Length: 241
Image 1 (cartoon, rainbow, N blue to C red):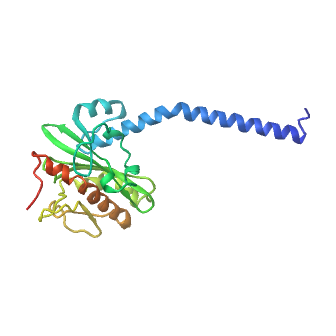
Image 2: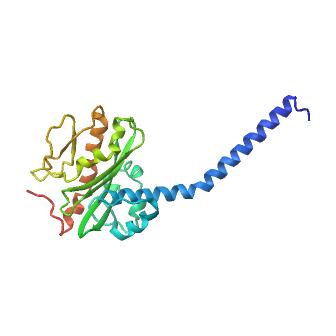
């Protein structure tokens, strides 16, 4: 065939498209299980980090199995859903359902002689979804730690929710106010409360008001769904004054 002909060029282009498509498909198929496994272990890392356990992916599963004593899937009444794997619950899909039809995963950890309750979070930032985990001490009120992440917040602004300095602000904060109402932890612009851990407030990120508001709403809205569970557990001192 004449290499300078249009037919040759056309056939060559088709062959190259097929080769590239097959190569990309093979690569995606080959890497799929590895990517899924990395996501699974990263999730374990984040859950553990809320209670102060830092680990790499290699050791994440071992430590997760050691310190996470229970993984529960709850209904809106705080009752356990049988046959539902809490770790596999997709909050993005659950949020599309009415509250009473959703599944609410919770992880119970035992670490250094203390028990913690870790709930996954998901909400909306400025541009897209934000999510994370919050760990409460056994009083179901005091924050042990948080981890936040995002899909598309602005670098240097909303994306700062992933930084240690911002997440550290939530440690020891309370999610109930002095009236016994669950209000979460409010991220407030210009907050000047210093180290007051009983006012349910932390300072926001400068220039990221909408993302900060999204974090506040996400914490309060998601945790309210766990109130029935906390109240059912006799060993948790839910604030009721």
